[in-house]
Image: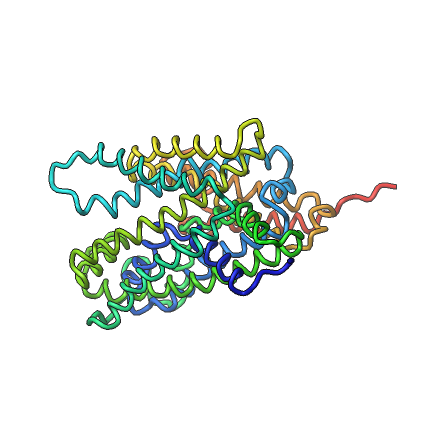
Amino acid sequence: MEKLSRKDQLLVGVTLFSMFFGAGNLIFPPLLGYQAGVASPAAFLGFAISAIGLPILGVAAVARTGDLPTLAKRVGRPFAAVFTVLIYLSIGPCLAIPRTASTSFEMAVTPFLPGGAPVLWLRAAYSLVFFAAALTLALRPTKLVDWLGKRLAPVLLALIAVLFFGCVFFGFSGADAAVGKYAAASPAVPAVQGFLDGYQTMDAIAALIFGIVLAMNIRARGVTQQNAVVKTTIRAGAVAAVLFAAVYGALTWIGVVGGHAYGAGAQNGAEILTFVAKSLYGTAGQIILAAIFVIACLNTCIGLLCCCGEYFHELCPKFSYRAWVIAFAVFSGVVANAGLNMILKVSVPVLGCLYPVAIVLIVLAFLPAHLHETRPLLYPLTVALAGVTGVVAALADAKIVIPGVTALFSHLPLYAYGLSWLVPALVGLGIGLLVKKENRA
């Protein structure tokens, strides 16, 4: 069989959605709705382009080229080795995996604790249980469709629907004027800001690594030819995109009407979701919200453990997949106890360095395949200019100033928006397309 049934294709798409959809995906859309208010349709359009379009394009890009190392080798073998390992470590055990436990603890456990509770010990106990559950499922990576697609993801979607339809039928309505960065006279500003906020979800990086495990699950269901696996992966991306659009739309609307009822002062989307859940259903609403965060974080954690374990087993086969996954789960459990604030403080500059390169690689992957052979500067120059600019900007955000260099780079177009790498990347792309490889007799 080289083509999945419609049911299996749907399940693979739902599985991909659930691997992506973590705590950050829950928090950003309500905050967007709250801040954009009446301008939320335009803001959501921009958000959808970067938070849905880029990740799905990333999945397709990796499917077209085979895997992340193959794509990265078009820049150069040393770059591929270093960049791929950095991507897996940052989106895996060093930052993203520990963050799934820390975030779900903050949202699912902390609100129910009495004053004076031993938070450090309770966080350690929660991390132990959380990673034990994730590890149990991650040890069977070809069963992700059965666990995530058939069981956990449908429950997650149903609980989000409970919040959404509660807002629809129980009196939440109205929208405020746009505030903060969304408040501007130009109608284009909300869409641009929405795009930038979607960029901050960092899902484009995750897209570069999820393909390896998704392909395993597709092959486990009988599709073995590479072309068929690629087509099935791209179809799964389309299913995930539809789910993302529906869920992001619902969460944005909750942010609009819930923010109107909440009033001024909300600092993040979690505050809006907590207010709405508690207002609608009382303590039961808090339990529903806790379940949403636990399931979303658990899904993402399982997917990331599987991807990292599979990659490092291929990189260093001396250690089994099982050994790698156990090691990553234990390490992540230790890091998770540093607390969410510390993890976020470290993750922002690290991911800021990697994200521009990830976007550039995704875009380049859709150019004609022969160009990386006939245009020798195309990949190296474009990636180098985007990467160097991104690193300087990320260091500046972390209050690390390189004398002379940081000030010079701060004059680049779009620097204030966190997109200073864009123009240098376009320059590198233009030069790379113009310089052809010399033909030697």
